[in-house]
Amino acid sequence: MHTVGFDKHDHAACVGGGLRAAEETCAKQGLRLTKGRRRVLEILLQEHRAMGAYDILSILAEEGYASQPPVVYRALDFLVGNGFVHKIQKLNAYVACAHPGDSHTPVFLICRGCEAVAETAATLKTTLGEAAKKVGFTIETTIVEAEGLCPVCTQTNAAGAPA
Ligand SMILES: [Zn+2]
Ligand SMILES: [Zn+2]
Ligand SMILES: [Zn+2]
Image 1 (spheres, rainbow, N blue to C red):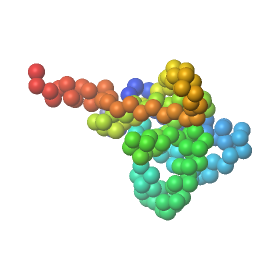
Image 2 (image 1 turned 90 degrees about the vertical axis):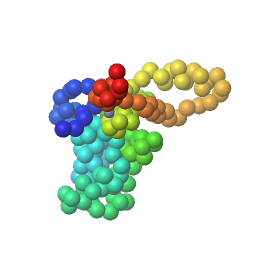
Image 3 (image 1 turned 60 degrees about the vertical axis):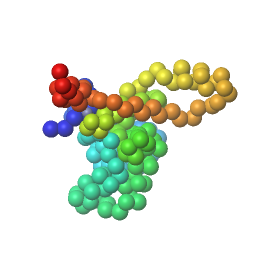
Image 4 (image 1 turned 45 degrees about the vertical axis):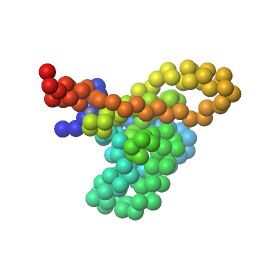
């Protein structure tokens, strides 16, 4: 069993939806979603968890796809550059976007217990934008990474704590 985000949801639809959104965007913008790029996205969609490039590489190698790191990095560059995947700096890892197709400021909730990652779109952008404007700063990208405990790990923690 693996964690599928922090909410119970139809995960098959979640993976299928993510792939479809990427396919549609690529078709619309004339981008090439090659088999390798698509597979990397699919691997990330299957886990609501940040994965390092080498985790992805070992899965691809097992499947007989690319076994060269540059291939994976190029696929990840493409996926990140087009907003299908986000990079979590804190973990130096990647996670599939939970809101593909929307322009949004991703906010990541990272569990320090099990490394599950949930993405939530926050309304932080306006507040932050206003604060930045006051000091004459132009924001180009914002990525918020919050660390804490997911519901499962919070419970485990509480159960293990002395009464
Ligand atoms: Zn899911
Ligand atoms: Zn996103
Ligand atoms: Zn957790």
